[in-house]
Image 1 (cartoon, one colour):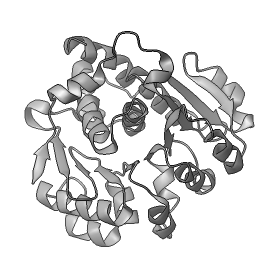
Image 2 (tube, helix red, strand yellow):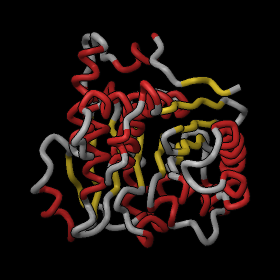
Image 3 (tube, one colour):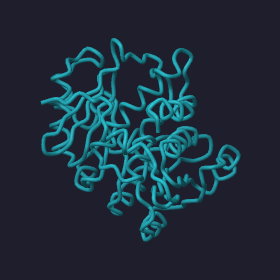
Image 4 (cartoon, one colour):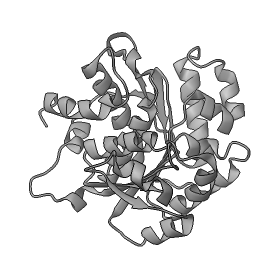
Length: 288
């Protein structure tokens, strides 16, 4: 059965912050970035993770990209990450609760960093380059994935990783929701991770049979999300929610709802940078 994604009392409670909390009680998210000139997508994800309530967010980039990112970041912290060995070392800190890999990461860096991130067994969002890097052979990605992973492919990335499951769907935008749900569910079982298949009808599926969908159509239409970087923001929102302790399936569902709600709150003229800044308005409207 496909559960419709809508705001619930549990989601509302999860988005709030309790009195007496401190930054580490709301988690520390790491967002990995690519080299010089490639940091914009990761910065969008990091800003979104912070806006949605992660206590701390650190952007990790090559030494050569530090100056560029430092000029763009304030509340988001910044650190050099030279190699996968260094990332594994960071996993010794139990206060690190979630990671986001993919936006602007670059394929070679993704191939190096994704296995190290998955080795850490923390809540992890894999998007964009973190998925495309394994197009030639997704087997190692699926073997390393664990129940704390959320993969967020758009149709093209889904087709690359799961060509047999994507074939019945036809062209993006023209497939029926039940077909998308079955494909996403089969992909979740194969990958051993939550799959969020992006689109106007977003589907979230988890191993074991849970499936939910959010249709950004009709009264919930948000056509302004068809803009560069909006998917990077979604990855950051889900990362921030998991950093705070939401389990992967619920974080993906809540993130999908909040992503659309922020777009609808802003309206026409939206660009990706606007989405994280709209989140506080959505929270205020919810009485948080």
